[in-house]
Image 1: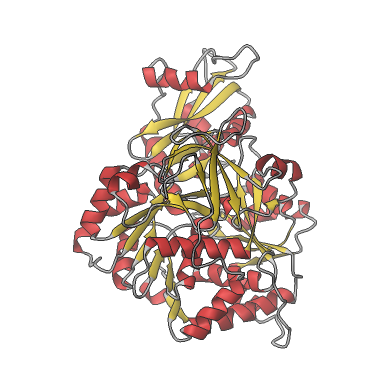
Image 2: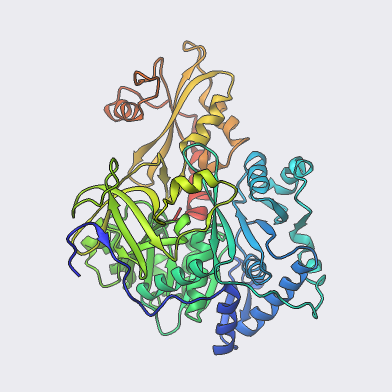
Length: 561
C-alpha cells in the first residue's frame, strides 16, 4: 500500500473476534487443558507454582463465584498489590464475574490511593499488607473511613479464606464483549488522573494482534516483569500469551538477574521490556552464562529505542525485535514494527497501525489530514477505542470527537508506507526509564510546600534513563532556599518514589508569557545552556535517588500509557 495522505485505512486481518476474557480462557482450556498456562515466578524456587489451563480455569471460576457472593456484576474491584499469579487469577475472575478491575500501583500513597478508589467507585479492594518496606494496610486504614462506597477490603492473608466463600451452584453471568472489564488510570496534565474504561473485545483482540505481529514461536512462553496493574502486564503480555495458548510466567517485579534466570529456566520465548530494562539485562554479569537460546522476540517501546540497542539485543540474544506504541485509551498498542522490519525502521519509527484500526495525522489548527511527512496529531478510530473516561463526560468529549476519532495528544508524521514517527507530544509528559510521569501532579504537590512560591517540573534529558525529573523552584526566601535533601524526603512522604524529582534547581525568576504562563521551553533552554545548574545532593541522598530509579521505573515501567 502506498499512501498519498496521512491516513491509514482499517486494514483487513484474520478478523476481530467478539470475545470476552472468560471466553478466551475457556477456549484455551478446551484446546490445551494440560498445557502450562501460568507460572508464579517467585525468586525462591521453593515458592514457585504452576497451573495448567484446566487448573487455572477451575481456580478462576471458584474466585468468580466468591466475588459474586459479596459483589454484583458491574461493581468495580480494585487490586492494590505487586505482581503475582494470584493477581492474574483475581483479574480473570473479576472479568468472569462481569465486574471491572481497577489496578492500582502498590507504590501509591494515601492521597493517590484515595483518589482512585473514590473516583472509580470501588466496592472492594484486594491488597498486599506491605510493599518494599511500606505498610500498605496502615495507609488504607488512614482513608477507608472516608470511602463510603468501599464495602470490603481483603488483605493477602485472607485470600485463601475469601476463595471459599462462594457457592459452587452460583451461575456465572453472561458477559458481553463490549462490557467494561478494566479501568486504567492515566494521569493528565491537570494532575487529576483519568480512568479509561476498557472493554473485553478491545483488550483481547489488541493483545492477540500484538503477539501475531511479534511472531509466535511454536510454543509461546512469555516471561513478564511488567506491572499487572497496567495495560502492559495485565493486558498485552498476559492476554497475548493466553490467545497463543502459551505459558505466562509472571515475576513480582524486574530484577535483571532474576529475569535472566527465569528466561533460562522456563525457556522463555517472548518478553516485553523497556529500554532501561534491556540495558540492565545486557550489562548483568549473568548474561553471558545463561542459556537464552529460546528467546524468539523481545518487545519494547516507551522511550526511544536507539538503533544501536536494537542491533545489540538482536545480536547478543540471537532474537527478533519489535517496538510497540500506544496508550491506555486505545487498549494499549496502536502501532507496532514487524520482526522483519529493518533495524533503522525499528529505531526511528513505531511501525504501522495494527489491523482493523484507522489512523490519521491531523493539523493542529484546522483538524484536516496533513500531507505525507508533515507533523500533526495522531487520531485513531476503531474497535480499540475506550468506552470513555470514568465519570468524566467532558474529558471524554474532549478526547473522542463526534465522528469517533480519539485524539491521542501525540505528535507524529506518517510516511507513504504508513510507518509512524513520533515527533513530540501535546501533553507535557516526562518519560523516565519507560515510565510515564505527568509534571502537573508533582507541581501541585510542591506548591503546597511552605517554602516554595513557584515551581515548574520538566523532563531533563538523560543518556541512560531518557529523561530525569527536574524541579525548578522559586523559593519564598531566595537567600535561604529549602534544603534539597529535605525537599526530596518531603516529596517521598507524599508521592511514589518514581515521581520524586531527582534534579533540583533554584531560580529567582521563572520566564513567563505576557498572560502569566510559565514558558517551559525557556526553562529547558536555561538548563541545557548551563544557566541553571542542579544543586548537588548529599552522597547518601544520591544513592537513595538511584535506588528509587531501579526500584520503580524498572519494575513498574510501561511502554504504553
